Each structure stands twice: as C-alpha cells, then as structure tokens.
Picture (cartoon, rainbow, N blue to C red):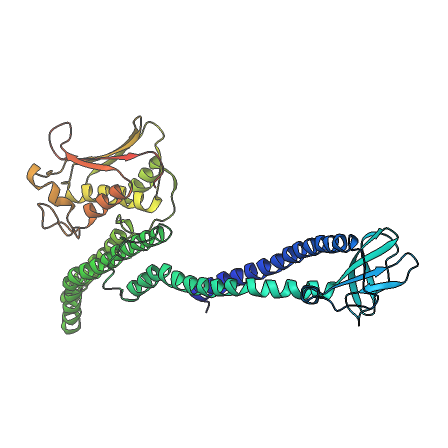
Length: 438
C-alpha cells in the first residue's frame, strides 16, 4: 500500500537532492572557470614583473612562498637559450615555442604557461592544472558546507510541512472510520484546504444519499411488517379452518377466504415494492421518452374487465400525441394506481375518464370519476400511506395515492385534487414538466 506522506517526502527530498547536486556541479564549473581566468591573468602579471628585472642569479633561486602556494614556476632564458633562472629547482619544464598563453604537457601533468620575450631574454611563467583543480575543489568544498546545512534544514522543514499539510486527510480518514450504517454523520467542512473540500462535500452528499436509502429500507421493512401481519394472520387462520372443516360447503368458504387473503397479501407486497421504487430518494432508473397515450391505452385495456364487472364505463381522451421524458415504470405505476383507485371507489353505473394533453411547458394528466369524492379538509391525508379514504370496505391497501404522489415528485411535477365539471366525484390533475429529469 502506497503512502502519500512517504511519496511526497521521497519526491520532494529527491528533487532537493538533485537540485543540490546540480548547484554543486554548476558552482564547481563556474568557480573553476573563474579561477582559471584569474590565474591566467596572474601568469601574465608575474611574467611582466620579471620582464623589467635587470639581473638574475646565475644559480637557480628558491621560489617565494606565494609561488609555492599557488604552484607557479618562473623560468628565464638568455638570448642564447641558456636557462639563467628558475623559481623551482626540482621542476624542469620545456620552453613553449610561441609567445602568449598555452597549455603544455610535461611528464604526467598539464601545465598552463605564459611566454614573453624582452631584450633577447625569454620569460616563461607556468602553473600546474592539477594545482588549479585542487584549489577549485577546496573552494567548492568550503562553499558546499553551508549548502549541506541548508539542505538538512530544508529536509526537516519539508517533513514538517508535509505532515502538517496531510493532517486534514488524516482527520477525514478518522472521521470516515467512525461512521457506521446506523450513524452516517456528515464530515466537518470547516478549516479544510480548498483542494480537499470538494471531496468532503461529495462524501457528505454520498452519506446523505445512503442515509435516505437506509431510511427507505427501514420504512419499507416497517410498513411491510405492519401491514402484512393482518393478511398473513388471516391466511394462517383460514388454513386451520380449511384443515379442520368437515363439510364441503365449509371448505369452499374457507378456501375462498384463503384465496382472498393471498390476493390481498400479494397486492400489498406489489404496492410496497412499487412505492419503494418510485420514492423520490430511490435510485434513478432508465429515463427516456415515454408516450403517455400508449401507457393510458395499455392500462385501460388491463383494467377494462374489472371496470366492466362493476358496471363502470372506463374511457380515455387523448386527441393529440402526448410525449414526456421520464421513467416508464414510475409513470406506469402513477397512472395505473389513479385508474385503479377511481374504479375501486366509483359505484356501479359510474364513469371514469382519463385525459392526457399538452400545454406550452407541461403535460397534463387528469383522471375523473363519479364516485363519492373526498372532502376538502381530508384531501391532503389521502396521500398518507395506508389511508383508504372514507371507505373502509374498499379492497385496496391504502398505498395507491402514496405511490402516485411519489412518482409525481420524482418527475418534478405537481398534483391537485378537485371536483369534476358536474361538481360530483373526484378529479385528480397531474402536471409534469416535459423537459428531461435531472
């Protein structure tokens, strides 16, 4: 596992080391060049100082301390080519062939020489390149000592800065480690670097979504446990009655009640699953263009037999193509539950009309019935879960309108309850935007 702390330290210290090496190399080259120019000039000055000297000892003289320290050698030849002076008795160098600055080889060394001629005499001043190199190294060593000290100080500073800069990440990691599915508290967003703040905000958004998902799951489990208890108890009871029944008529009655209980439980499970899928906090599914006309036609076809058995007229009015961008399953559940509720609560001989039309920016879907309607003060309650309205004898499970409202909210729409044109019954009006969902 890679560590950002170690990676940053390694990269920064490597960059610092490379920089120090480059500084040392470039300083050495620059110093060596400057020293060479300086000593070349000194060769010239020493040669000039000996040019004006009138006499020279016939015997070689010892070199001065300066000449010894800097590695200079002075040689003088008379007009006949006889060496009449040398500053170093144990150093014999060949005479250069031309005047001026030259580099010559003598033995295993390279020498830098300056040669001048004056009044028949030839003066040659020489300096070993090895001596120049040693002086350059000595100088750069003295120069590198503060650089090494600065390097060490910077390394410590970098280590401290990196650890301090990564402290928010460690704090976030510790905060995430403390989270659990039952406690998704948002991470603190204050005193964070701007580079880390978007990550923390995104994590908090994710935790919020997970919290909603867990709430949906808990609500679903609680609703299922609460509502399934009654039909499952009834099914168990009818099974016992069926087992203990002695007559054919008693068995048939118990079997019919058993089938009714199974159907009610199956419908309740289906509605609970549908509600969990269309709740606003639930994950988005496929979003595409949906023909409301086609959905209405399919739903009316599916429920026309139920309406006919109750003597209810079920009709659709869609004179124009109505297209919306949304989730097909959620839209189907919305319209299907509206039609189903209208059929359930409309008395025999009544009528249910489904209308779909376009406006400038929205799609309007209306479901009107000739049932008993809902009093104004109780209309908001109809969207609560397991609310069956005024009729407790209805066979529904009280989730239809909750599913409808969830699907409407999911599509950024609005829903309103009112009376039909005759003043009787109930008209549900839904307006949905035609633009795609976010």
